[in-house]
Image (tube, rainbow, N blue to C red; front, side, top):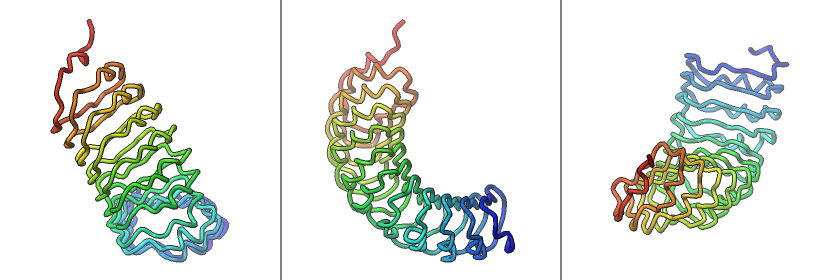
Length: 268
C-alpha cells in the first residue's frame, strides 16, 4: 500500500490481520475512508494518522489496540465525522473534545478509558450517535448533552456515572435508543421522557432510581424494549402502558412496585 498515494477508500474490515496498526497509512493523504475494524491489530494508534486531513471515516473497532487515544485525532482532523474505536484495550483519560464538535458518530465504548463527560459535548450539534458504554466514566450527566438536535443513539451504560437524569432529556426529539443501565444514577425518571416520541429502546436498569414510573412513557408508541429493573422504583405500573402495542421486552424486576397489571393482558 505504500505507493498507493491516490487511494481515497480503504477497507480491510472483518479479516484476521495481525501486527501493528500500519503507520505508513499516515502517508496516504488522499484517504477519506479507512476501515480496519474486526481484525487482530495489537499496537498503539499511530500519531501519523493525523496527517490524513481529508479523512471523514475512521473505523478501528474490535481489535487489540492498546495505549491512549492520540489527542491529534480530535484536534487535527477537521473533516473526520465518524470515529469508532470500541472494543479494544485502550486506556487513559477521555481526550479533549473541544475541536471535535463537527462529529456525527463517536464510539469509544468497551475500553478502559476514564474521565467525565465534558460540558463541551453540548456543542456537538451534528452528533447522531454517542457510544461510551462499558468504560470507566464518572461524574454526572451534563444537561448540555440533552440539547443535541440530531442525536438518535445515546449509550452510556456500564459506567460509574452519578447524579440524576436531567429534566431536559425530552429535548432529544430524534432519540431512538437510550442506554443508561449499570451506573449509579439517583433521583426520579423525568416526566419529559414522554416527549421522546421516536424512542424504540430505553434501558436504565441497575441504578439507584426512585419514585414512580412516569405515566407519559405510554406516549412513546414506538417502544420495543423497556428495561427498568434493579432500581428502587415505587408506585404502580402506569395503565398507559397498555397502549404500547409493539412493545416486545418489558422488565421491572427487583423494584418496589405495587398494584395490578391486569390492563396489560391482551383483550380477546
